[in-house]
Image (cartoon, rainbow, N blue to C red):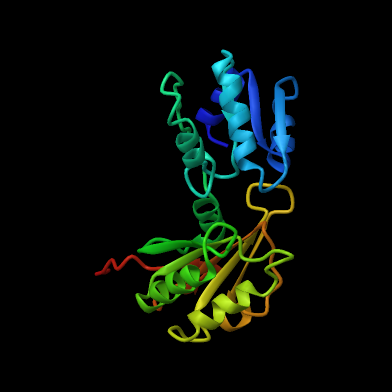
Length: 227
C-alpha cells in the first residue's frame, strides 16, 4: 500500500470494498466504518459508496494492487457520471505486475503487455486474440487471474496459444500472494508453466525471446551495449 493510499484511508469515514480486501485493511484501520460484499457485487458496492458520499461522508473504495489496473476506479467514474457534485480522486497503488516483477528480478524491463484470463467481463475469444498478438509480437506478458475453480484449464489454454509462437524453453515466472503472508515465486519454462497449479492469487510472467535467468533471477535485457 502506498503512503497516499494509507493517508486517504486514514482520512475517510467509510471504507467500501470486496470482503477479502476489507479484511486486510481492517488489520491496519480497525476502527473505521466498513461496507463489504462478495464478488460480482461491484455495482452495489459503488452505489453504496456514492449514496454515502452524497450524504456527506468521505468514502474510500478499495481495490487490490492499483485501483486503476483491473480495479474499481473506472466503475466509480462511470457510475458517478450523473453526480458531478462529488469529488473523485484516484490514489495510485502498486499493481501485481510491478511488485511481482521486483520479486522475480527484472522481467518487464522492455515492452510488455498485461492480460487478464478472466472471461467474466471479457469474451474468451478476445483474450485469445490478445494473447496471440502479444506472443506474435514477442512482448513480455504479465497474466492476471490465471485460474479459478470455474476456469481451471485457462492457463493451459493460454500456454497452448503462446507455444504456437514461442519456444518451449522460454523463461517464465510465477508469483503468488505478492505482498501478503505466504509470498512466493519461482522461475519455470513455458512448457513447465502449462502444467503448473495456480490460482487467483497468482500472477504469471512470460518472458520474450531475450529473457534469461541471471544469478537465479528472471531478467529481460533492455538492449544496452557494454564496452
